[in-house]
Length: 395
Ligand code: SAH
Ligand code: SF4
Ligand code: F3S
Image (tube, rainbow, N blue to C red; front, side, top):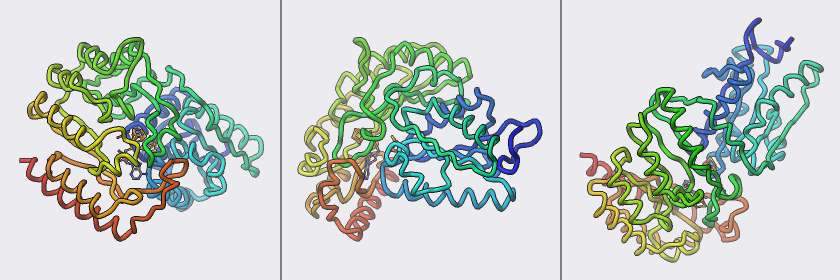
């Protein structure tokens, strides 16, 4: 018998879980993967956190703001449930990139959390929840068990094959995990581990499974998809294979790193009938000095040539980017270079972020010396510029 003081489950019902997802598409896909695993283990997904027996936060560490939001939401969700269902207390899990970033320190920062699981340990979550439920059954008044698993190195391939996709038409599909680029501001290589590629046969098998479920559009995911390499098949080889899958109508990919993008890729975008004519190519800064400090591995000139090439080969293809404002030591002149680049290139849209100092990274050793006010001023300027460009390009 499950204890109903802690779990608000009905007589015959299985415990239900709610997942709050933060961060990138990779995390969105991970939440689906976890939903599939938990469904398989007999749990039921709910979209009402106040009714859930298990609340899971699938978190992002890319900027401080994303982490702060999670910490404040944990208490809020619990309070909400107490109000709606007095006497019940959900099991709370914190998974994803913050789990790897802070490991068991999460329990000090957020004492309500019962389990902490890193991105490479996702397959262990159903069993961890069973253990928490069993411990509660034995000793309901002493629900003190805290479990953390954050040191796994690889994910088993099976987790991608539960057939669970949130959207009936479109599916996200992981082609590679982790990142080995170590851009100096970025926490991803530390929380997601080194770049690993899935076998192309497994990727194609998953696409076919998704199509059997009714999906007709997919987005291939990786932190740097252009670096894909498995037994002689590179990214261009992979998109050619994907293009030939029967039943697939359209597909795209993200994210491309400029240092690994090539004319061959642009020719594939232009030539393959199912591949979307769009490219997300993060520039991050228009200043060569800052690009070097960021360890991006390309110059402004290289990026601009790439853009010219893309536009020549993929006539009418859309182009989007990411930009970081206020990286350590960014001067007015550096910022002006980014501003002018945005003006000259004319992106269809751009994500513009204020630099956020991240633990583990190389940039943490540099003083975060662009003031909050300067960051906000530059952010607003570039946002306004991009807004006007996007508006012009829309019509
Ligand atoms: N792998 C992708 C995206 C990674 S994270 C790539 O290389 O482009 C998504 C975006 O978050 C990055 O492109 C970058 O613009 C931004 N970002 C990463 N770390 C950041 C930090 N410390 N502060 C502010 N923005 C950051
Ligand atoms: Fe982070 Fe750079 Fe890797 Fe992108 S390529 S995830 S910005 S380290
Ligand atoms: Fe965030 Fe992790 Fe994605 S840090 S951006 S959720 S890989």
